[in-house]
Image (cartoon, rainbow, N blue to C red):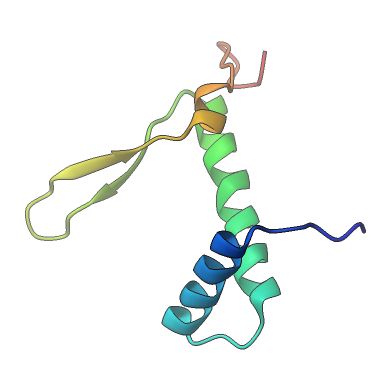
Length: 80
């Protein structure tokens, strides 16, 4: 697989996330990020909204990003 070039800002964010998650390899952060994005795309294709629920109040904060906004949904839950 081809290597990906990352901006210094993204490298800094990956390093920060690696430290926060107590993992040794940046590739683990990237792999988890890709897994999360795959899941978010699948949910969007099904017409679902991505969100986080506060455990005590039930408040829901929705998540959006330009990439997910481009995903088309049809009645079968598949990308159109």
